[in-house]
Length: 160
Image (cartoon, rainbow, N blue to C red):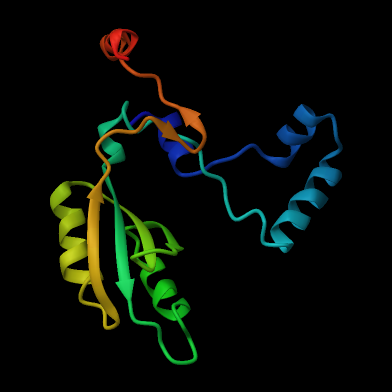
């Protein structure tokens, strides 16, 4: 893997001096604002936005709807937090509708994601059912449109 890409994928960020230079602020002001954001729980980390269409190493992702039984004195929270701790889980949201949680999972292959769901997620006490939707192609990621191949653009021009 490209070293710069690896650095970005691991979430490296600008240091405080670089941010201060870009923003025209002092390093102390940048430090204070970062600490304020961290202290309030607003800033959780640094994640670059990557194009999953350009690199196969970004693996397979799936959106999994999970129906769970709420626990006495804990509701959905304890089970949702337990599911969120798996390394395979990128995101976990409490949802309204037919399912209780939406869990976004990544793995190196379809088989590994399927194994995670069948052997680890669905066997947790309190998990009633799951519905797995593999993400086949990305069109927008974290607010960024993903450039489509030229042949796809040509087809879209003639499609009503």
